[in-house]
Length: 270
Image (cartoon, rainbow, N blue to C red; front, top):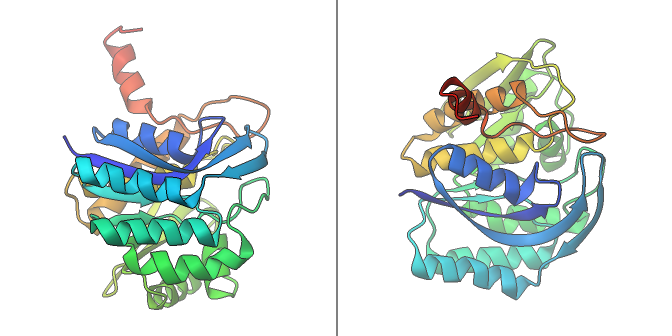
């Protein structure tokens, strides 16, 4: 059984964070484990509060899992402070981890800052060099390079500069930069690839970034190379958005098990 570990925050609404990561791992046939960095108070409308875990607890969650179980990929999501980042980096350097997918989560859809401003430099210093793949969206990429991104050429330039910060491979997620397409730029240090899908018009996009990055990690755990893993993850997140769930008064979650549910209905399971 292939195994992936998510190091991220808990989402009480179940649409993002470790909940989304674990659902995504299992949707890919990968056994999922978690090291919780924080507990959030949130629903489909907004993030209300965050309670960080103690750095030692995070460190020990990671090391105890590696002491016991073979792990084939790691995904890192929300890490909100310098102390947490340092604890994660220390633990990962101790265990010599498999490929790491880092999603530099900074601000929630409702505008709540999930990464303290002073922790951004620590993220770059301590975790970027450990990561195999980094997956910023447009806004996160702009924060990392400190300039605006207006078009595809800007996305490529951003990928180059993010690689210089210590990353090995970069996926810059374009979101709705182009009117009718969702375009991502992939860069492995040697060549660029443009990955496109049709734009799905829906407000129910809670957890898309978490889901996409954990899908990349799941596919890496399954032995796929960088370009294969991202291409498969792009197809998966597009399907999850197409089948997104209308829940709550705000942004509903993507449907992590859309394919499984479709097969179950076809076989009259429910």
